[in-house]
Image 1 (cartoon, one colour):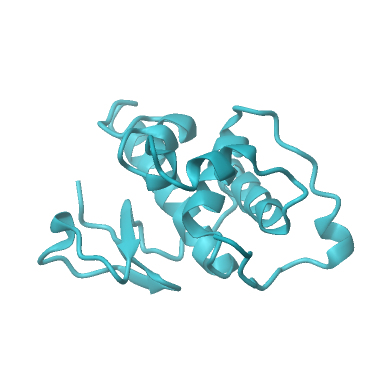
Image 2: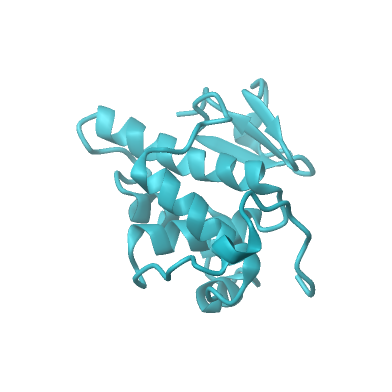
Length: 161
């Protein structure tokens, strides 16, 4: 992306500048980078929805004894190969995502959302979704399924294993 999209912020500008950095490689840092890589063009609700997908996957894995194909922690779920395209090798945005800092206004929003998600205080607007895609693609796994939510430019699904 050559320019950053406009998003609605839930906080006042002075609160926004006080967002402390997350330790590199921490669950919050990896989740915030995933949110930035996957949903930085969305309004806050869309960023929250992608965070909810990650947390729903973590919760589902934990409910199954801590083992599931997509991993059982925020870090594993976000970085599972071929699950979140921003982490795919060769993705054109991966280098940008890995280098983004708190100087980026949208990344600060992603950090706040990631902190809420990791703390368990983020509402789930997706109805328990574990999968999503943008509205302009039709992945094979979504055929015949009804989205549980449509938020921003994404469709969310809660009936995919």
